[in-house]
Image 1: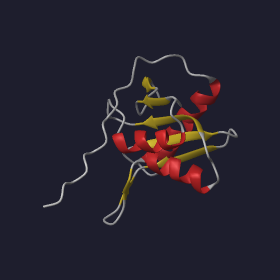
Image 2: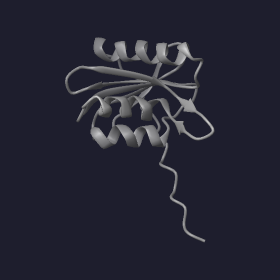
Image 3: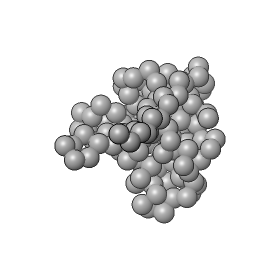
Length: 127
């Protein structure tokens, strides 16, 4: 039987720090994306040109994406080559490994802020 790949690690956010106005906007966009479709998660990212992309998690019989994976995919599809920051609005206390990996594909050091559904920032992942 072939080995199955291990699930990506789930990074734990560090204590929250005050957000810049640009990062606070990402929280608003992520909350909106989540709320529009009553999704489990919402996410938003900002690319190297300051453009923002928001998405909600997708759970279909044939396709499952975290909100952060979809936001990163949207950015890449629009031509982004680097991310400056990301936000995930979720009820979980940790960042999902797949979304974390997608952000790290484009930015080794971009902050990934994890926020509760009410917009309260729970912490930030920087690695």
